[in-house]
Image (cartoon, rainbow, N blue to C red; front, side):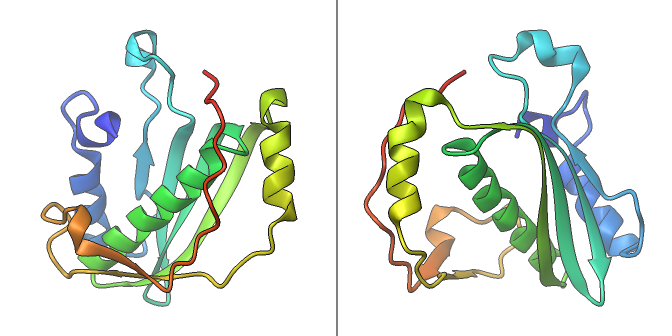
Length: 163
Protein backbone atom coordinates (compact mmCIF):
# COMPACT_ATOMS: atom_id res chain seq x y z
CA UNK A 1 0.00 0.00 0.00
CA UNK A 2 2.90 2.39 0.58
CA UNK A 3 3.68 2.49 -3.15
CA UNK A 4 0.03 3.21 -3.92
CA UNK A 5 0.02 6.39 -1.83
CA UNK A 6 3.63 7.55 -2.32
CA UNK A 7 5.44 6.18 -5.36
CA UNK A 8 8.33 8.69 -5.49
CA UNK A 9 5.88 11.45 -4.53
CA UNK A 10 2.96 10.22 -6.66
CA UNK A 11 -0.35 9.29 -5.00
CA UNK A 12 -1.50 6.57 -7.39
CA UNK A 13 -4.91 6.14 -5.72
CA UNK A 14 -5.80 9.83 -6.14
CA UNK A 15 -4.54 9.76 -9.74
CA UNK A 16 -6.43 6.54 -10.49
CA UNK A 17 -9.73 7.97 -9.24
CA UNK A 18 -9.21 11.26 -11.11
CA UNK A 19 -8.34 9.36 -14.29
CA UNK A 20 -11.40 7.10 -14.13
CA UNK A 21 -13.70 10.07 -13.48
CA UNK A 22 -12.15 12.15 -16.29
CA UNK A 23 -11.83 9.38 -18.89
CA UNK A 24 -13.73 6.22 -17.89
CA UNK A 25 -12.88 4.55 -21.22
CA UNK A 26 -9.14 5.19 -20.85
CA UNK A 27 -6.65 2.35 -20.99
CA UNK A 28 -4.15 3.84 -18.54
CA UNK A 29 -5.91 3.29 -15.22
CA UNK A 30 -2.93 1.53 -13.67
CA UNK A 31 -1.89 0.88 -10.08
CA UNK A 32 1.55 -0.60 -9.43
CA UNK A 33 3.26 -1.77 -6.27
CA UNK A 34 6.47 -2.76 -8.08
CA UNK A 35 9.05 -0.04 -7.49
CA UNK A 36 12.50 -1.23 -8.63
CA UNK A 37 14.20 1.71 -6.89
CA UNK A 38 12.99 0.52 -3.46
CA UNK A 39 12.99 -3.30 -3.76
CA UNK A 40 16.23 -3.61 -1.78
CA UNK A 41 14.55 -1.76 1.13
CA UNK A 42 11.51 -4.08 1.23
CA UNK A 43 11.30 -7.15 3.48
CA UNK A 44 9.31 -8.79 0.65
CA UNK A 45 8.87 -7.19 -2.78
CA UNK A 46 5.22 -6.80 -3.73
CA UNK A 47 3.59 -10.02 -4.89
CA UNK A 48 0.53 -8.13 -6.16
CA UNK A 49 2.61 -6.17 -8.62
CA UNK A 50 0.35 -4.54 -11.19
CA UNK A 51 -3.35 -3.89 -11.65
CA UNK A 52 -5.38 -2.24 -14.37
CA UNK A 53 -8.87 -0.85 -13.91
CA UNK A 54 -11.31 -0.46 -16.78
CA UNK A 55 -14.94 0.54 -17.31
CA UNK A 56 -17.40 -1.34 -19.52
CA UNK A 57 -21.13 -0.49 -19.59
CA UNK A 58 -20.87 1.61 -16.43
CA UNK A 59 -19.11 -1.14 -14.44
CA UNK A 60 -15.59 -0.93 -13.03
CA UNK A 61 -13.45 -4.04 -13.33
CA UNK A 62 -9.94 -4.78 -12.11
CA UNK A 63 -7.31 -7.11 -13.52
CA UNK A 64 -4.47 -7.96 -11.16
CA UNK A 65 -1.15 -9.51 -12.15
CA UNK A 66 0.38 -11.26 -9.15
CA UNK A 67 4.03 -12.26 -9.64
CA UNK A 68 4.26 -14.75 -6.76
CA UNK A 69 1.19 -16.53 -5.46
CA UNK A 70 0.96 -18.43 -2.17
CA UNK A 71 -2.24 -20.23 -3.08
CA UNK A 72 -3.23 -21.08 0.49
CA UNK A 73 -2.47 -17.91 2.46
CA UNK A 74 -1.72 -15.04 0.08
CA UNK A 75 -4.06 -15.45 -2.87
CA UNK A 76 -7.31 -15.53 -0.85
CA UNK A 77 -6.25 -12.32 0.91
CA UNK A 78 -5.31 -10.67 -2.41
CA UNK A 79 -8.64 -11.65 -3.97
CA UNK A 80 -10.53 -10.16 -1.02
CA UNK A 81 -8.46 -6.98 -0.80
CA UNK A 82 -8.47 -6.16 -4.52
CA UNK A 83 -12.17 -6.94 -4.75
CA UNK A 84 -12.79 -4.53 -1.87
CA UNK A 85 -10.58 -1.92 -3.53
CA UNK A 86 -12.60 -2.31 -6.74
CA UNK A 87 -15.82 -1.74 -4.78
CA UNK A 88 -14.37 1.35 -3.08
CA UNK A 89 -13.11 2.92 -6.29
CA UNK A 90 -16.33 2.07 -8.17
CA UNK A 91 -18.40 3.80 -5.47
CA UNK A 92 -16.06 6.80 -5.45
CA UNK A 93 -16.43 7.10 -9.25
CA UNK A 94 -20.24 6.52 -9.22
CA UNK A 95 -19.89 3.23 -11.11
CA UNK A 96 -21.27 -0.25 -10.58
CA UNK A 97 -18.87 -3.12 -9.88
CA UNK A 98 -17.83 -5.37 -12.73
CA UNK A 99 -15.33 -8.23 -12.50
CA UNK A 100 -12.13 -9.05 -10.69
CA UNK A 101 -9.71 -10.84 -13.01
CA UNK A 102 -6.68 -12.46 -11.42
CA UNK A 103 -3.61 -13.40 -13.46
CA UNK A 104 -1.16 -15.61 -11.57
CA UNK A 105 2.59 -15.72 -12.21
CA UNK A 106 4.53 -18.22 -10.08
CA UNK A 107 1.75 -19.95 -8.14
CA UNK A 108 2.56 -22.52 -5.48
CA UNK A 109 1.47 -24.37 -2.37
CA UNK A 110 4.16 -24.78 0.28
CA UNK A 111 4.78 -28.33 1.52
CA UNK A 112 4.12 -27.27 5.11
CA UNK A 113 0.59 -26.20 4.07
CA UNK A 114 -0.46 -29.52 2.50
CA UNK A 115 -2.47 -30.67 5.57
CA UNK A 116 -4.30 -27.34 5.74
CA UNK A 117 -5.05 -27.42 2.00
CA UNK A 118 -6.62 -30.87 2.40
CA UNK A 119 -8.92 -29.48 5.10
CA UNK A 120 -9.88 -26.59 2.80
CA UNK A 121 -10.56 -28.93 -0.12
CA UNK A 122 -12.97 -31.01 2.01
CA UNK A 123 -15.14 -27.95 2.70
CA UNK A 124 -18.28 -27.40 0.67
CA UNK A 125 -18.52 -23.77 -0.52
CA UNK A 126 -21.17 -21.73 1.24
CA UNK A 127 -23.34 -18.93 -0.09
CA UNK A 128 -21.30 -15.77 -0.61
CA UNK A 129 -21.96 -12.81 1.68
CA UNK A 130 -22.90 -9.33 0.45
CA UNK A 131 -20.67 -6.34 1.07
CA UNK A 132 -22.29 -3.23 2.49
CA UNK A 133 -20.48 0.00 3.28
CA UNK A 134 -21.14 3.70 3.62
CA UNK A 135 -21.13 6.19 0.80
CA UNK A 136 -18.39 8.24 2.41
CA UNK A 137 -15.43 9.54 0.47
CA UNK A 138 -12.95 6.67 -0.06
CA UNK A 139 -10.42 8.32 2.26
CA UNK A 140 -12.93 8.76 5.11
CA UNK A 141 -14.02 5.14 5.59
CA UNK A 142 -12.88 3.15 8.59
CA UNK A 143 -13.28 -0.52 9.53
CA UNK A 144 -16.63 0.09 11.23
CA UNK A 145 -18.15 1.37 7.97
CA UNK A 146 -18.01 -2.10 6.38
CA UNK A 147 -20.36 -5.04 6.91
CA UNK A 148 -20.51 -8.50 5.39
CA UNK A 149 -24.16 -9.50 5.33
CA UNK A 150 -25.02 -13.19 5.72
CA UNK A 151 -21.37 -14.10 6.31
CA UNK A 152 -21.13 -17.69 7.54
CA UNK A 153 -17.44 -18.64 7.73
CA UNK A 154 -15.91 -22.01 8.50
CA UNK A 155 -13.48 -22.13 11.44
CA UNK A 156 -10.03 -20.67 10.80
CA UNK A 157 -7.33 -22.93 9.36
CA UNK A 158 -3.99 -21.75 10.74
CA UNK A 159 -0.71 -22.00 8.87
CA UNK A 160 2.68 -20.30 9.07
CA UNK A 161 3.53 -17.72 6.42
CA UNK A 162 6.63 -18.27 4.30
CA UNK A 163 8.81 -15.40 3.13
